Length: 398
Image (cartoon, rainbow, N blue to C red; front, side, top):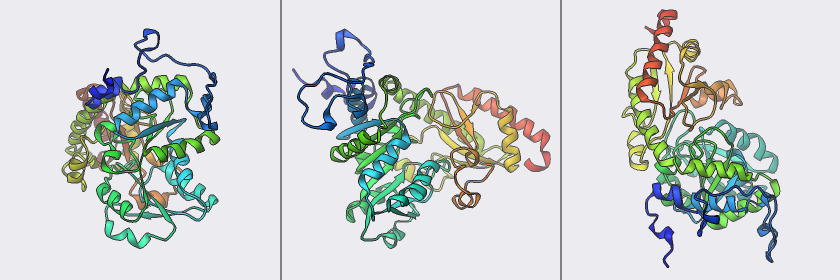
């Protein structure tokens, strides 16, 4: 009998069926939760292969690993207790004392803090690069450089690096290429297909999609995933079985959710770009975005996050957030509900005002994560909030 997974050719089918146990466990259509910390031994030869929940090898973990690898056409995958657990464990597993890395100069705040404040304690250094200018990368190389780290789309400005050049540069200089693919999700971009060694995710976001768990994922080369797993086994950042169950459930609707969010976010971005009260919109599918053509070539869609600034700056932004009724004012992104936040006070609050200013993150920048509500309802809600801003701050939004 042929392998059924050979028939899972398209990503929608893979999201639903890849990795599922066959035959189904007692006929269960849904993968059961194996709420067991330990399992009977069958002569495992390595500590890392002992069936134990902290070692990320319960049936719920295995199903997720196979499904995630299938989604990005990768050799292997691993889930972790959070996106930062995935990021920190990955970097610590591939870098050692004395090593050096190159990183994109507009990283997620938590990653930026880890790279600049924690890695130096382990004797690991980092230089930041302009990911849009490959001609400047070589001057930052040292004999100790081992890793090149970028994001698919940056948070919160939605910049798109020259990702093909990143892969080529890393290969030509014998560096590992690592990318945070959270914002795109496997629906819009699959890094292993483009030659990246490892793809990282905060699975809290689009992969799960329901704002009810925290999780991370590492996807890519089998030898590197195995290396990350060995360190994760010791650091203890494993995902519990029920969270695995919820994450797998979320992944099954990933294609439907993300493709709707692609469409809705583009419509909202176009609305905001034409609004008199908005001074700037950051979304790669807009033709005004500086990396618009690159995004069209690389991505199937630009997902559900955009950021924008109001003419009235921070005061107008705060008033706008006070008067919207559908999006929830909260950090995070990628869920079925729309969320808005001011990055200067949430995701990038750990950076100094000078660091944020250098990155282009103003105190009044609003990040919007578009959910699956009706696009028209969201736009009408924004229009009502803009009317309040215009009434109360008429001199600042003219």
